[in-house]
Image (cartoon, rainbow, N blue to C red; front, side, top):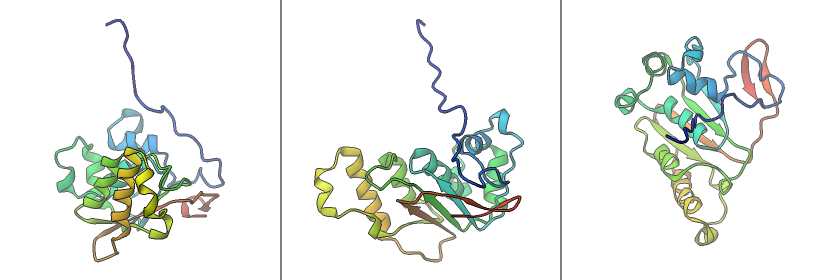
Length: 191
């Protein structure tokens, strides 16, 4: 080979720069993804998933991947390379009922790819939800580029969903920027 390229993604998490981001229970995506992918640097992470609600900050593919991992059933994950310790924690110990994917950008600027976004609406034990008022008028969809246009099709379908007796609800939230994480010693909310 004349060139070898190591495409490993961002090596560290970018700080949010908000109060409370150093509390227990606040985990960067790099560390969390490293944990469920068996990266040796994160073998001892051991996130407590015995919680009712989780916030995933970002509206790109990493945020969608984290949300999907937390929402998928063991059956949906059986043919993947999800680490055994992560699968055990997610499928046997987790009590998550609500996953909030929070992004400061709008649906037209979100960095989801259509395939990953579309999968949110096909999860076995999870319903994806979106407030339709966060979507631009459908009349402008014809002028959108390929990936954004496909994303809008998926987002409009998600916006038609209603909460039901599904075990997990996945809430997509746009135009929201966290300004602080609440708690003393451990996170307990987001402003």
